[in-house]
Length: 114
Image (cartoon, rainbow, N blue to C red; front, top):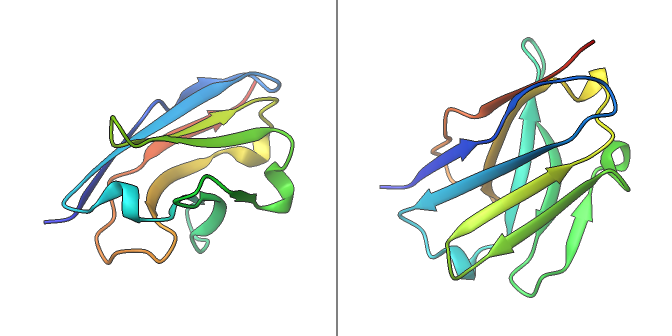
C-alpha cells in the first residue's frame, strides 16, 4: 500500500522559512524521482519541485531561488526547504513521485500571513 506522510507546515510571516518533510511507504524510494506539489482550495494541484534519482533538481519558476528540494535515501525522506516565503505560497503541500502514484497523502498546510 502506497502512502505519503507530509509534515512541517505551519503559519509563518512573509519572509520566513519552513522545512517540509515527507516519508513515503510502499514504494522503492531510491528508485523514484520524487516531487512536491501544492494546492489551493478551488484550484488544481500544481508542481513545485522535483529531485531525480541522481540528485538533479527542477523547480517551478515562482519558487526558484527560494525553495530547495533534497532527499535522504538512507532515511527514505524527501525534504523541501522554503525560504523567503510569500503569501502566494499559502497552500496544502503534498509529496509524491514525479510520475505520481494514485495515492496521495493528507498534505501539510503552509500559511504565509502577517
